[in-house]
Amino acid sequence: MKVHPVKICCILLCFAMIYTNVPTTVILAETDRQNAIQVKSEESEENYEDIILNFTSKKMTEDESFILSVLNLSSGQKASFYSDGPDIVEINTINSSKATIIAKNVGTTKIVVKIKERKKFFSNVVKTLKCTVKIGPKAISVKFQKSKVKLMVNQTKTLKVTLKPNNTTEVPLFQSKNKRKATVTAKGRVTAKEPGIVKITATIKNGKTATCTVHIKQRN
Image 1 (cartoon, rainbow, N blue to C red):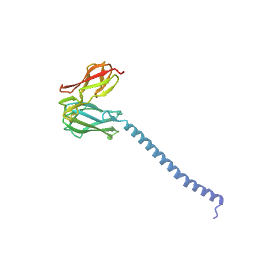
Image 2: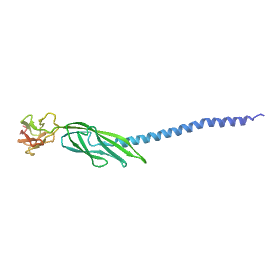
Image 3: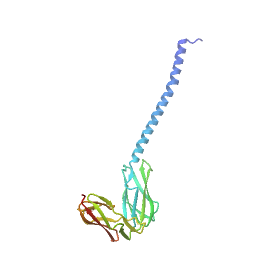
């Protein structure tokens, strides 16, 4: 039986369309699926990148405390707080994003914070954060390295102190006895305001105080 040439051409054309269109459809579908996965992954990473701690490191002395907070948690996310050194710090959880960290003994430890996200039937850890905590002994003495300093009006200078013991992490409280003539920051940086003499004090928690006398002169 002879097959008409036109029918043969139609059959060949159909086979050509089948073998060219099917793979293209499959490839397009797979590409769309991969793009959707990538977009979803990028959105998830962006959401998790916003989750941070209010402190990544902290220096304390014994019996001090501070609040460690997780920022930018979303609904369905919860933070769990752990310590590498439970004998060094005590952790008291306040809520799903905050905990009070209490210094117990001298040493260094890491607070590990695991962020869990609740799905329909389970929760999984989506991010882990860490805060390094260093605890030193309380200071027993304080002394300015220079007991007298000369400054010109508008000049600044950081006053350095020596604390004992050497491994203390305590920071003294700096105060100016005359803020109109000179101010001082929490780190001991003095700014001269007016000519005259002003005393700057540094006080530690046991009540001991050191004094530095600042002589301020007007610029010529």
